[in-house]
Length: 126
Image 1 (tube, rainbow, N blue to C red):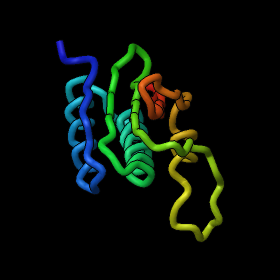
Image 2: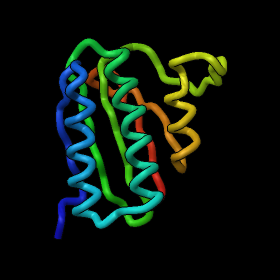
Image 3: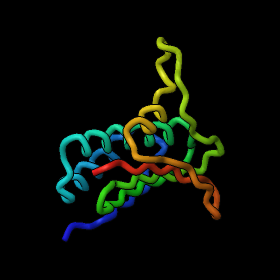
């Protein structure tokens, strides 16, 4: 039976996105998840990792969990800022990340962690 969870620390460097996507592809293959569910999970993970890279200056953590009807993506970082869904100007280059997360996930949220930092999470339908 394949692992139901994957966890890894990621550096505050652009290579983190590539590492996160590589682990996601292993998980999707192991979990036999494809099609729209895999595509949506890729976009949501990408936006959440980009958000952490943009706002955190330290190592952050990615967790992926397979559930019967969804994939749970969690990204912990130590930054104070809270993500929000905004509608950027049509010409803006940035600002669409959490809008995409909101659109492609069943639900998402943020929880403050007792030992500091926050975890942004999203549930993507399988």
